[in-house]
Image (tube, rainbow, N blue to C red):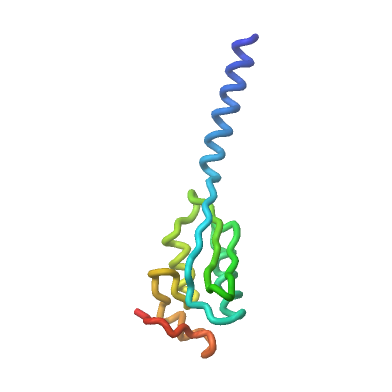
Length: 114
């Protein structure tokens, strides 16, 4: 009986560890080219609806978006690409021209485009 209990406990612990690894969440800070509160909304909406992102919030003063995401579902490059697709630069990733053109004039970034 003791062996059965020990095996059960070991299996439970092993299952818990693998579940935690699958749910690993990281937090990153990404510099954007946002300009106003409308930009904040666009970036946060784009990221918060991206599968694997648990939380995204842009600080309007610093223009830095803080993102918590599941590393098994989405990666940093995909997050930056989503910001670029919304029309904003994300660290070294430039905003997409087609997305910039869709932004209101006051929200268009003044950084170099590609």
